[in-house]
Length: 498
Image: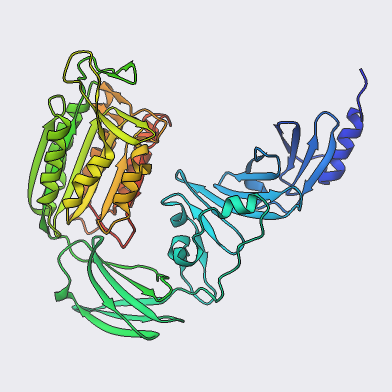
């Protein structure tokens, strides 16, 4: 059988294209009718057509090539995609051989951006990309420039070969902010190349003051007497272009929060032989137990950080959609600005084109499971004025963080944090050896550890660090089969749950 070019000639073509040595390590990837040969040593990738081994394109100058995990192509075969082990992404046009798009994929969040840093991202993606402004020592997250650089669709434009978006008409320099604790007051100094608009002061993520500014500089002392009690006070300046400074955060004290802690925990595990979309809904083993465990441990480890608490455990096996929504709306209405509301839901979860829902038992044997849409929960929570933390232990629960209702809730002025048990395609696992659900067990272990740090001179853990601990524990316990998810409204400064 004849070979159109011959094996030896093909090898010679690869070697010449990639400038190989005898010690070069190659990786090969077959994509459709193309073979991609990558040399990490030379930072190059050669694309050959199969079976002729005709060299289609040589891409040189790949980004951080020693960290390359895989090189592939988009489905239209017009773009070479470099994926690094660090989560860095690079997209090269095969026609021009130029780098047209970059990206970062970290903690299941994605941000894509062009040379001018015009970007689009998943809800938290831009917070994972840091840039440096000339003349400034700080690193800024890309989302701090959202008013000027956030362009949904920028990746599609670049991959389609459309010309780059124009750079902003002027330099983008966020305002600078310096805050120093001086005795019983905070000395605040801000400066902007444009014009300052607002100084925002928050305590544990709650806005306590929006100081209107004008001009390019601002200096003022803010007395500690004017700052409510809490764990963290944070300051951030914003200019007329909606660019934000870095956030300056300070620990306040470890005295109990002045507000009340409201707790609502719900678990459903006996579904009365219910069906959902024609499939029987299996009973769970630990959802109601987990709801009870959660309530007890929050009272034990979290409630001492508040002036008082109210706990409302709900038997999900007996609850109706209307009664549960009524309880949520009622406790949300009792959550004033200085209060905190913690909600826990454990059940089966389901996603459909209308969004994410928790499933409730059928009221009749072998009937249809009752759907409790997350959109309805979001509406019921609108009555809350205080902070809201939602712990959602359900299969496919990350869909709730991507649900339109969750996005609407997270985009309001409410301070909402959602931590879910699993990504959208995963199950939420439970096991008697864990004492219940993997997620609930990790949450309670993290709360216990956080409580242990109080009173030992250490800073209270932020909600972000607690989520990181929960995620690490669940991934390890389930051997990667389950990965929790995190969603919050805009980040306005450090906050802790206890």
